[in-house]
Image 1 (cartoon, one colour):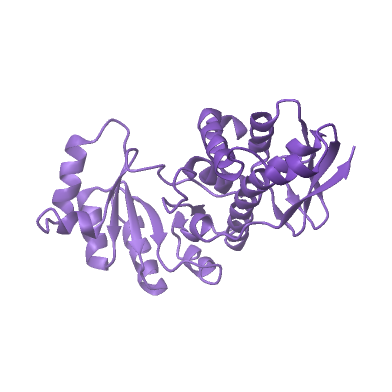
Image 2 (cartoon, helix red, strand yellow; image 1 turned 135 degrees about the vertical axis):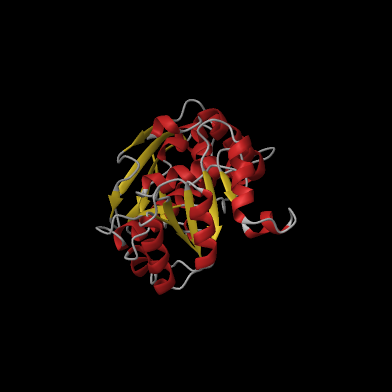
Length: 287
């Protein structure tokens, strides 16, 4: 899974974070801590969860001080309990102190996403449905946030506007209120090879249009569960059944009932726009 990360892009994010936090220098550490002092730091989980983001940390440390030695103690995807030692870093005390907040920001944020994703995945285990993420990501962080969703057991939806057609109500309204069938026809005529066409459906009538149009995926948006169940039956009974996504008003309290309607995917914006950071500390000791 780590091989799917774009480390060049991560390095850009890391350097932006370092510039933002350290700027011209860590005044406190440089003025108070002797330059020859050495330290040993241990990342420790302060709450249970799923770890993601460890591959980012050596990029942080090497960007600040290439002599720092980083050693992960668990892999990304590990389910940890309170007190689990996650990784360690050894070297200049000043450099480790300067690295502390940037490294924790990445690790806590990404582990929080993986942890929340894992909770959703656990809720619908055995239903056959999969948890989808969305484009509701932190600007610039989409690649690593969607990576964290995968670490937590979720599935990535489209990465951006460039890799899948998704026809929503705004597209129809702003193109002269054209019917779904016409919008799909136009998309089919111009799409690049291999690109799927998804249609948002808010009513059973929309579902019927999307089926008739030959959409590859039909998104059941903000439908009551009973309507969603009827829509799934209708799509499954068609000559060429589309894949089915559920979207809207999804929470840990509703996701199981949605999955039991028979949909293939359930998209959850909360995974990336509202996940709480996992509580992780960097305990420091003289070395």
